[in-house]
Amino acid sequence: MSRTVSLALTMAVAAVGFGGCLMPAQGPQGGVVASGQPLAVVDDVKVWTTTQKEKVAETEYKDSTGKTIGTGTTYQDKTQVHSMKIWYPVQGTEQLRDEDFFKIAGDQKALDETLALRASGKKWNRRGMYTMGGGIVGMIVGYFIPQPAVRTALLLGGGLAVSGGYYMSFWGARQMNPETHAVDRSVADRAALQYNQSLGNAAGVNVTRKF
Image 1 (cartoon, helix red, strand yellow):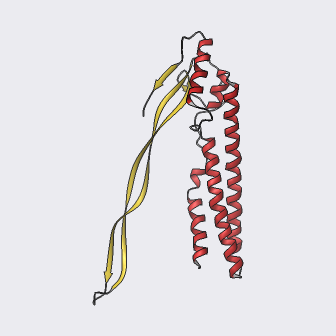
Image 2 (image 1 turned 60 degrees about the vertical axis):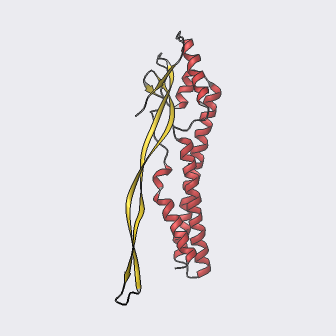
Image 3 (image 1 turned 90 degrees about the horizontal axis):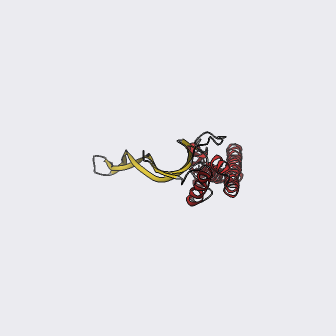
């Protein structure tokens, strides 16, 4: 197998292997309506871990004359802890999607921007999935083509399509993620303050929580 074809297959396998990253996070349930409780913006810290293989040693194998006949590499899992500051809106103690939050608060501009972001994410996520599917089909067809030049072109083109489609879908999923906001935190704070004042509250509540 040529180096070009191997590269295409590697790109495709790597992209498909991370397919779980292409689906948007579920987040809180949507369709929540006003309950009469105050709105607030909560500060939080998201913590997660990743594990990857790390080379820790390399061994040389030699014959009786001392000539190196092979090498071996030893890997071990390395786990890293990551953290990121996030914020999200709530009604009372219930976490809300941005869409529901701004709808309840009556901030039409922020709501429109949020809906536009989610729609863009859905478009790019779906477009990326289609591109990946087309790339995979192209690679499957190319694998059975007897002409080397045509086979290489289809395999390489399919691999690029899978890789490109993956990043398109990843970008779309990120836009659809409830933790991705279309507006600045200050906009949400102001919307909560104005809504709470309309309820007769003196000010919005700013809560800080860590888990």
